Structure formats: C-alpha cells, structure tokens
Length: 109
Image 1 (cartoon, helix red, strand yellow):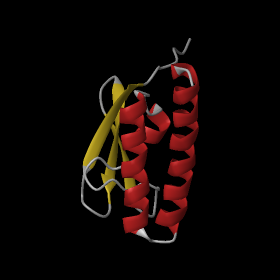
Image 2 (tube, rainbow, N blue to C red):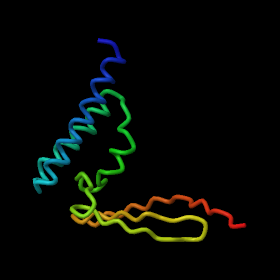
Image 3 (tube, rainbow, N blue to C red):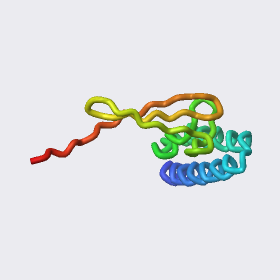
Image 4 (cartoon, helix red, strand yellow):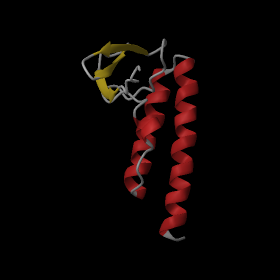
C-alpha cells in the first residue's frame, strides 16, 4: 500500500470513530466514547494525518469526550470591542476553551 492509500483509510477511520464516539456519548457511555477518541488520536498519530478542525474542536482536551451542546457542553458568546468570543465549557470536567472571531460591521448611509 502506498502512503496516500494509508492516509485515506486513516481519515475514513477517524471520521467513523468520531461518529461512534458521538453515539456512545448520547447514550451516556462516556468510557466507551473516550476509548474511541483515544483510538482516533492514535490512528492520526501513527498514520501522520491531521484530524479535521471540525472534529478536533468538538473533543474535550482534558477528558477526551465528544462535546455535544446541551449534553456535555455549555456555550456562551461574549461580545467585545471589534470582535466576539465563544466560550465553550465541558460539563463533565469543567475544561474551558475560548475561540475569538471578528465581527464585520455594516456601514449605514
């Protein structure tokens, strides 16, 4: 097998394992979901593939549980000067992550 094929299979497995982890989290089987996410990171490390940002941002860095708004995640939006900040807090371990984004204002005539 070539490196390209191995990386393609690894990406597919990462996405599949993430879906399984989400299902187990919804069933409140956190230990199974944690094992899926750890396996996902291990596959990415061995095959030298980056985990997509959409998946990586939705996993708690401290307890390795998929973050589902309302179930395992609290989300708040903090308005600031020229931009805003999204504050994501894990309900299980209390881990906090802040994402900054700029807001484009429309000019009024």
